[in-house]
Length: 80
Image (cartoon, rainbow, N blue to C red; front, top):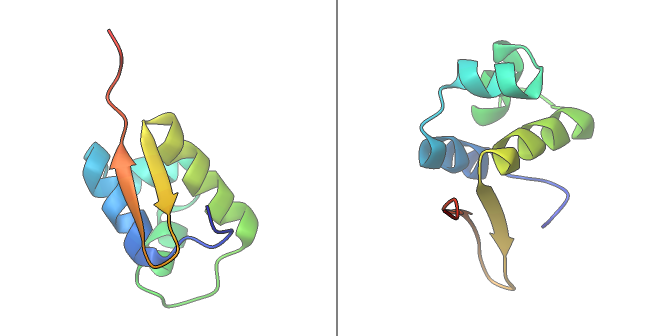
């Protein structure tokens, strides 16, 4: 996956797992304001904060996918 996840990908990933910005912030160990500002494109977010968001979402089963002309998210179903 690209080293930079777009705000739209973060929003989409949250939607897949049914998380609020508060929940993502909690799981990633960040302030809610950091998540909100990034998703709205209002301010610079450090690469470390983006990695924390990515790791938290991946731990919840989200997989970020990138091909040549597109990028997206999928939710891995738990195996039983």
